[in-house]
Figure 1 (cartoon, rainbow, N blue to C red):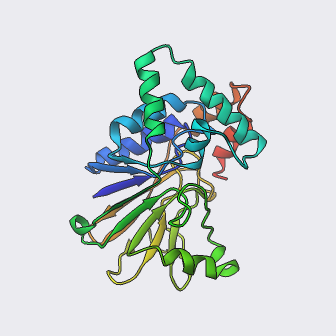
Figure 2: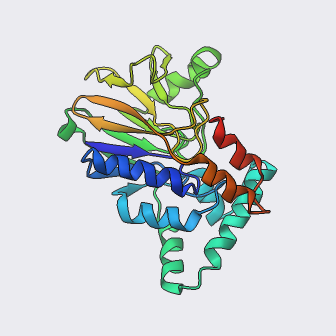
Length: 257
């Protein structure tokens, strides 16, 4: 089995709850689709945890922004980006500080692996999309508003592609169609001849009106959507205590929006 997490956004309470859940299920391999940092109050601790536990980690748009420059970010996201950079720079332990920056700087934008161990075809992992791995969004409404976009994306997928970025979990098919985890009864029984793009949702900032952390587990011939409750109020308090972080980045966690 393989756990796939994404969009942690410096939320150590959510990440810790998800890591505990993964361990309790006996899952050994973890793939992180990026956006480890940004928005939230504890970037360094989240980086350390992902560096220690994940087998594969990818570059998200917020990781890229902290490392380089935020482009097309709103004011709150941009401010959080600069604050995050400051937090990482102010680490007094130089080897640890250097290790975090080296890790961010070495993150790839895409990862593929054979899926034979779980009875599947090729598995592709990106943060945004198979076409623009760091920053292209794939929205559920695209199945109605932009079907040609989805057809173009699926041309780049051999079997299964796992994405994050929108913070909304669910599954896309070529037809095109989108199914929420609830519509799938939380498990997608993989068709060996049918392509699918699976959004794993967000660990640290869900936006589907469910405030529980979201991730998926790749099982033999299936993908399971998982939700994990965590102490949202503790994170809200930490965000509100940081003047450089917009209060909304904390309060939105209560409603999963």
